[in-house]
Image (cartoon, rainbow, N blue to C red; front, side, top):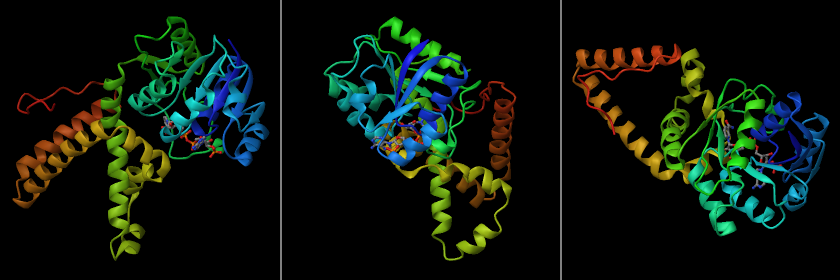
Length: 299
Ligand code: NAP
């Protein structure tokens, strides 16, 4: 299906796509591109890529599919490096966690949205990074959201859809702004809570004891605070409007909870916890939570 895939950024996301496509027999040749020779050599030794270059323009020269998997802060530079170097029929797609910034970067570099650009985001990952962390099953039974634009060529969209399906993913389509709002709530906000909680506790004088006696729940809740700081700085900067709103809304909820605790309002606490438990249990069982009539809808 893909004759030559160029992966710009051979880390967890780019490396896992390469491995999955290879396992599926959906690609003939994979060329990797990145800054560090050591990472690229490791990727080749692991069989993730066939060859590599540190020059994005050379990487895309004969590619019919280009996948950008660098941190969001490096996307604009990657677009600039490949501008004018692509085959006419090459499809460009990416795995960036925020779509508005990627689309803005493309528009700034190309002066318009290239017809064969299909912005995308695999809703899959771990807290680990680099090619060593990549594995072929990462996308199996996971969602990939594509955010095509009015300019997007249907053939390019079809090729990217089939690429992800061959990795075992379920592909959905969404508007760019809607994507960034949804992901602010379900991914970016939880990461802020984990980073914020661990940092707040680590800065306390008795932090040794706090971490020594932390139980499994603390470990589960804070796993994502081990994620790459550069990647998360970039995500926050790229999605600051939606994430700022989500953080404000969440902070209001915390104030409400704190006030109920301070005034000893057991009924209020029970209502919040019962509602949250029902929603969480339903989510785990794949049931869409219903909003209780007594509670006003959140914007
Ligand atoms: P990663 O494992 O750190 O891989 C990033 C790759 O990009 C590395 O191979 C790195 O190699 C290269 N790179 C880093 N900075 C660069 C720069 N300034 N210019 C050129 N190349 C650079 O990160 P990842 O988790 O795969 O994330 C990649 C993208 O996927 C990000 O946009 C992220 O938002 C998105 N994403 C991540 C997850 C997740 O859970 N991790 C999930 C969905 C989407 P060198 O350092 O050798 O250049």
